[in-house]
Image (tube, rainbow, N blue to C red):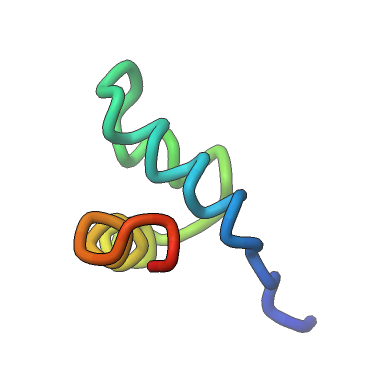
Length: 53
């Protein structure tokens, strides 16, 4: 099975969901079927470079 390719918009939506703090990162990752380390990589990229991350 080929790995899923996430768009910039999808990544941003997931990261913002975590930054809002309504749900835990673990819960968000389960819902979107990504690892927590993947979430934190995306978050760090966005915090460093904005939407270009």
